[in-house]
Length: 244
Ligand code: NAP
Image 1: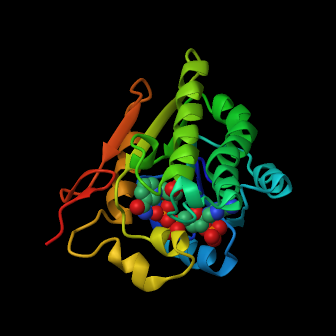
Image 2 (image 1 turned 60 degrees about the vertical axis):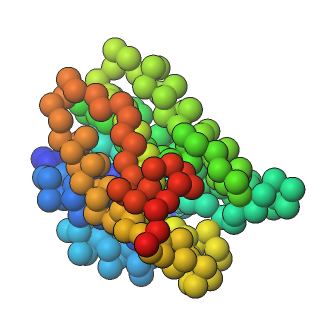
């Protein structure tokens, strides 16, 4: 590894994670990109100029092996996550709720806890969490994802308080609608239903969010960007969307 600062991006095989890996490499970071789908990850990492490493944030052994190969970590972008389903509480699939908690909250905790010593040792560390508007506003059908993203936001904000006095900044970026594979995953591969989410409106792109990640990561060391909420102009709330 060179003497450039090292950024770890979780969930970097598509969407916001892949775009953040690119933006951070362009901003001067040595980027280590992790995800489960090795072919997609290799492709995204090559396009970004990043190093690809297998990572499943829900698997303790996978996280331990990923972290053991790092000699340095200056920035952790906790991006791996997602939603499964859009059912009301009355029809809740609790296995899906459990999986959302596993990836968005416990995955966040597993990776963050493992990397904290390196982040502190770096002398200028940073944790950036990709949360969601779902972490701020519950919406009908969102309950399981709302709970997971509210949980992720809560642990991010607790970490900010716990690290006061340490050389580690903590930032939460909460986007609204971003056109990625998010809705395809949410609706179990139903492309028509996924496309309808963005119909008649202009969503954010993964690159729009990645720009915010790179901006927060390149502020001077004494500047902590605590929280960013960003939405498309066509969206004014979790479910308040203008469609043409
Ligand atoms: P995406 O294209 O589906 O990307 C999700 C990424 O997470 C993929 O790279 C996926 O890679 C990875 N991932 C999922 N489970 C993982 C696991 N167990 N271990 C490691 N990586 C895992 O969707 P996205 O929109 O970019 O989502 C990124 C983040 O933004 C998520 O936290 C999501 O909740 C949040 N977000 C999205 C939106 C939106 O509208 N798109 C809005 C607000 C917030 P593998 O499948 O290869 O592991």
